[in-house]
Length: 400
Image 1: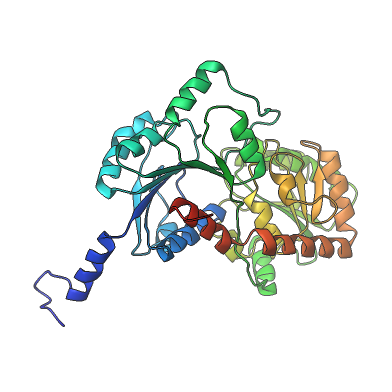
Image 2: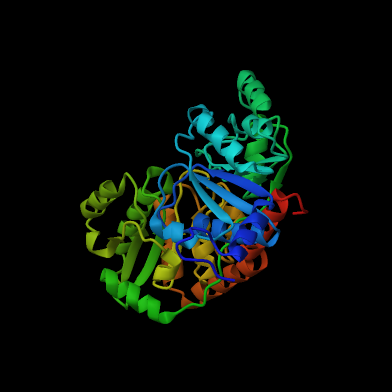
């Protein structure tokens, strides 16, 4: 069946498809971030909306600010709507009016929110708008030294009131579940759904291409950390560890991938330590796994000084069969098996990191063995398709 190109009306089949889609249930997923690259969270969202679609649901993703065109294209599906919802910080009161309008516009059956914390006005807005299920997706890292102890009585009371409509919390690690429950601000049941990552075919050509692009010798052994350039990620600790290492041996290179407010500070520190020529800061890379970051690397490091919720970069590195050196804190020990898939080190201890690097750099067989062990763990527990399916089942009311 055809129509005049001047009629302004879509083909009849498109009309029927649109009408059918209007009958599908929807979920709104409010995220306190604004994607500027194709990283771990962005990939999860793509797989999640596909899993939700397979379950017969449409998804509305609300981001806290403008998003990159590359990400918009990456997640462009007929069953996905992108919305902007800025000013999500604090209790969310600054964006409450706009969120209410979005809820009334899309009429979702399920409401999910993530980042910026569980204590928000969002659960009550969702309940009043008619949502049948309300979830908090907990990715919360914690300050170093923070103990999972109840907050003060007034905060616990406010928290219990604001989170009363929650159906459940979905935590990305046992650490996140334990510390979240320990705050005492909600009585909602807390379910662990671990992070997942894509499994890629390792391409040696990308190793050479990436190193050539950034002027890294093909003969060097490369130690890599992918992170936001801030104090909490332990970049300064890694630079001091590298300085110690380079006083003992040559032929190694330290690679940092990511941007952030402290990037220039860390470049200055590398120069002051006299290791500038052996350190590369790439800044933002839109798709680290696709651009060859992990293939170009020999060891992955996560020297965080705060308690990481899980560590997606660690999981991505393990999916490329890299051994991992990680701080023994937060959710990182759940993923890095000390002495098997990597080495756990004390928080902020550059000497201990240096010793761990020396051990791995001098033993090719150990690096390969640890990389294989980590890869097997990814295949068993952290495949992104399974993670997305579990989240979709949970949020759409099926079994997790």
